[in-house]
Structures are given as C-alpha cells and as structure tokens.
Amino acid sequence: MPISLDKAWDFFSSPLNLSKITPADMRFTVTSNYTEDTKMYAGMIITYKVSPLFGIKMNWMTEITHVVDKQYFVDEQRFGPYALWHHQHHFKEVPGGVMMTDILHYAIPYSVAGTLANKLLVNRKINQIFKYREKAINQFFNS
Image (cartoon, rainbow, N blue to C red; front, side):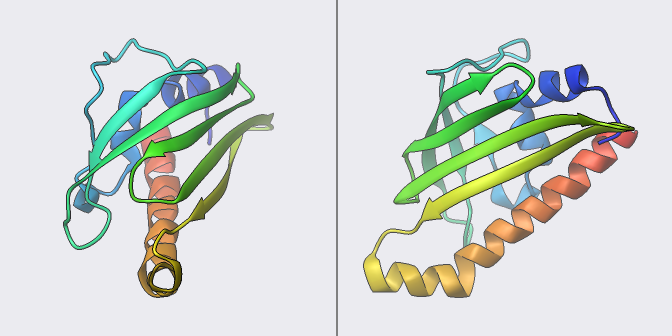
C-alpha cells in the first residue's frame, strides 16, 4: 500500500472500516455500537451481520485477541459460520509504503458435508473476498 504505516494502522484498527473493503454482495454490516473513532484493543468484541453465501443473512462475532501496535492484530470468531476462524493481520513498513500480510486459519463445521462445501464453495469465496480487499485497499489508498 502506498501509504505510511501510521495511516495503514489507523485505517485497519477501526472496526467500521472493514465494511469499506468487503464485497457489497456480502451485505456486511458492523452491528456493534462503535463510532469511527473507536480503535481496536485486545479483548474487543465485534458483531456483524453478513451474507457470505446465497444471500443468507448470518450473525457473526469476533474477538480481537492480540494487538501489537503498528505490527499485527488477530481476530478470532466467537460465534458464526465457521468451526474455527483465526485471522492474523501483519503490517510491515517497506520502501514506498506498507506491506500487509494476512494469515488465515479456518475450519468448516458439519464434517464430510462441510469439507465438501469448503472445496466447492467456501474456499473459493474466501479467496474472492481477499482478492477484492486487495483491490479495494489499493484503490482506497491510491485515491
């Protein structure tokens, strides 16, 4: 991203900004009572409404479990569509801007049916979301 580490961290540490980089078809809405000035902290609970597949609306709750200022943060699902969701966001200052690296570990419930759904739908959808985010982030910070 062609911005400073301070600006990148400021953007990503606001829970409300996630909807700005999520595909519109997911109808992603933060339902927690936060403002634009709210910054994440370890222990923060964030609730959402999201439609990840087939327009089906779901509740999702994550907790920010780790925060190291301007280096990384971790969100983990507490309630939602996954059996496991552990998402690390790492930030590193590089010449010309900031490199952000996502490390995601997730699992789908429902045993064999979940494994099949992951192969046919979920993994592809997650990859599409992250590709969309990369494009949206670049457009957002290049404007």
